[in-house]
Length: 284
Image (tube, one colour):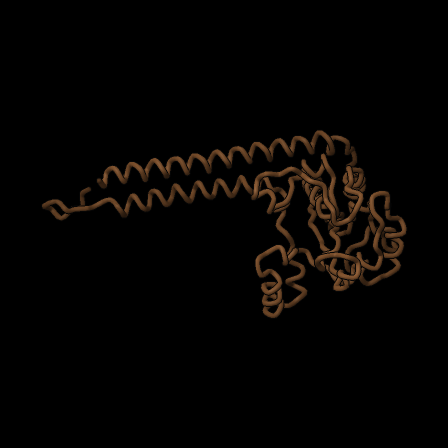
């Protein structure tokens, strides 16, 4: 009876291990195909060496995508995978169908990283969001890119790069502290898709992580802010891997298959009966 049970268990583990491993291979291939798509359709059009020129070119390409025309109403990506629905559409889907500020920011971040330029997402916060018909305080998303040794801001939904008084690209702190930089930037905003809501999309407050996307996320943020300080917590950014859903799922699948394999060997080792021979040595 025990031998039969062991056989069933071993076959079950083998099937689960194979399925998770195949899922990892599948998502690895999908990630490779996405990278090839971005390289062929976007990166091959970039012939600059200077980082600021690369940013401006990729920003323009991210802006010139199909649009949903109305803010807060993203296009349907026809994603059946529930994990992809949680992680959000991959960059290839966004490039083909467009999207709102957060989606375009994901595409721009992926493209910049392919050009070895660090980039991350920033979420503008406005506590008066209900007056403008928004459902939460995270009202707009932009991109922070590391250009020539400093972080600068780019807005792919409105094709904006903010410039300081020295004619250099401005960062978050400069935009926040100098209203002229903000006013001049949005004056050049391209609003062919949606109007720039000046009273809503301000830089008075921002965070680099959407805490309400997590279960009890706001409570976690408040707890961490009390423990480590509000500024430190608000500067925590989304890891780049989460902007690449296929790669994220591939790593999760490989880790799961490794966990199943380790668990199999551990359980087999401790469940196998041991006895001793006449000399006191353990035998199976």
